[in-house]
Image (cartoon, rainbow, N blue to C red; front, side, top):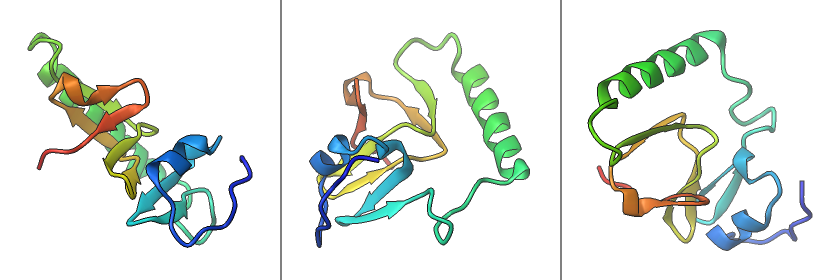
Length: 109
């Protein structure tokens, strides 16, 4: 883990500087580390089975429909704003312009 000074509020740029940024979520400037025991813990086998099945179904559904839609899985960084960055288990990105070399910028609900 890179040494990051303690701060009251973190930003997307702070996340990019962290070596282990795939293990964090940033919600409204507050840093949450997924590898801490009191946080999420390791996913269960059932959780992983569901994630894998969902990815397979989405991949098969989107296959052959063009390169616009892509399926991603954790760790895949999604920047919602400068103070909120998450790593969802499963994500479909419909807009190729939202994809970057660091993940995805923005979300559509």
